Image 1 (cartoon, rainbow, N blue to C red):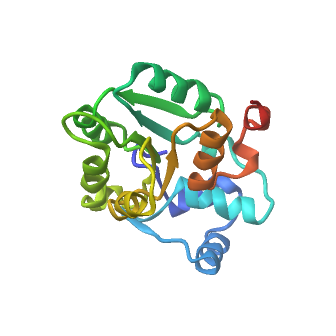
Image 2 (image 1 turned 180 degrees about the horizontal axis):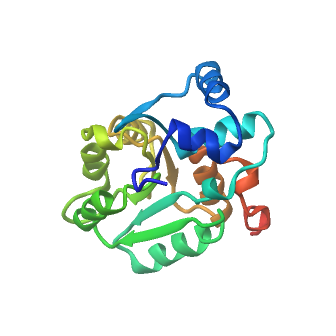
Image 3 (image 1 turned 45 degrees about the vertical axis):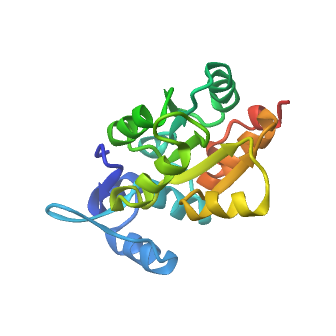
Length: 201
């Protein structure tokens, strides 16, 4: 699989054990976006995964890579809690961390995560500014953002969502609330979830 997560259509069909015309039919039926990957067109592995899940077909080993997560918080204790809560939720998921918004932005460019979980109240580059940086970059158009904040109120929640966050979680929250929010945003099938962790307190 390419580092970008893209798979050429012929390779994708081969992985799934189907003909190229069948795959093209699925793509059209599901409205899946195709990308350019010289010398032809490509599908993102997550989109191909969803096509298979919709049809209740087995997931090939080559598509079982887990999502990439980046967790950003200047509080080391809370950062550890975030890691402990999300670690093991998906098979083969990778989790990166950053202790401030500026380092978080650097790691975004390095890791290209599927999900960014960021605190909003950080010195230097705040979480709100980090969200805006992400949304201003077309390379991150498919990235999901979960913001965590100790501030409350409808006006503040609008600011958070307007900055580009897909969802926000007010503090204090439980590990289960965090896991459920992450699952909602990534939309990964139950086949790829470690359900025992999802149910744990």
